[in-house]
Length: 483
Image 1 (cartoon, rainbow, N blue to C red):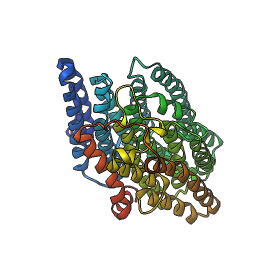
Image 2: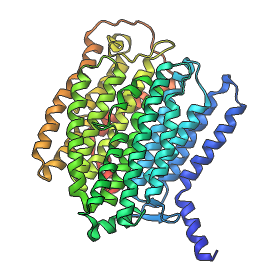
Image 3: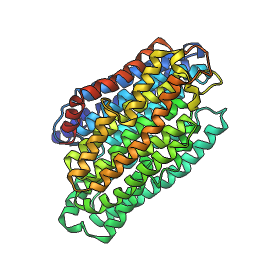
Image 4: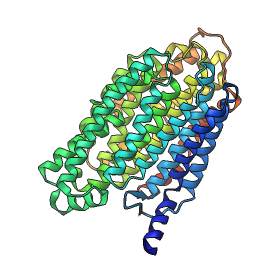
């Protein structure tokens, strides 16, 4: 191997340093966990969180050019990849902090949960930095296989096992559909590289019938991973049946990875066919916003309600992507990042109220929370107001951004639909606030949770206010990521 090749290879390893570190850390924690007893199993969680924070530091200190390719042009580092990886790593660290008390109270505090979570995070990072269809698929499958196992993590729960089987079967079907679409795109364009596909599409393949057929299969796969209607059938059952600590992981980190999948395949690789895939996304977006908000009203289980809420929010994210403009992509990224922060806090509240033999996953379980803990009732109210899209919380600016993006490209009717169903969505969020403040409590037990969890959860909710009062910082960050 000549010196030029060695330098090129080594430069690629430097760019992939966060992924390499996280992979080694996950393996080390897996071995370390074998030496720990149940009494000091919490050390696995400590080392897992520290590994995520160190990986986030490595990611944040990387050079931030417009775009760098490495490792045989299979791996790319750009600002979007860097920013999404930082958010994903920090979100997963928060999820692990929230999860530890929950797992300990149920006597299922096992190292496997953290190891699977770390490998799922590694898959998400590989997917986010993919520069080839091969890397995209490898990252997606690494993340998905870990998530299937995490859903079935509580082996004593028949509901969790049923949810895992549903997730695995439908996820495998979606992965096969996505792979079939990738094979068609490769057959038409003759390239596995995203930039090679983009060049081929711009060079005259944009109207090719085979390419359009392949795009349709890709959109189906993306729709499933995001949980968009009509590919949403797995979301409510998996959210409800999974242990809540796994539900929050699926509802936050995996959604960030799915957003990266959509951005890599559609705006980056298939920008020349934007007129074709944007029409497909219009259908997914409208159906997701409508069905997600309407069906959520009828839910009594909070995790199912948040599942349908997620479906509706995916519809708003798709609004920004289908706009096909830099403003739309920036608004979509702002939306997914802010949603991940808010959803992490909302599920964290369920974890806080849960105890041995009690999941706290019914809406009525939050009845009279203000009498038990005025502080955490206020935190939950902040999170619900943000999900409802009320000012001055960050959710308002997220919805405003995607609505402005579709208005600027002439989709006035889409903006009207988004606003109307946002009003419907406000009802089921505000219903929880009403139960907390105006109903009598049905449970008088003391709210548990470690000092660390309560502190991080409070900071999580207060961050929602901070980003809403001063959204320019996050918006500017997203504009740097998607120029």
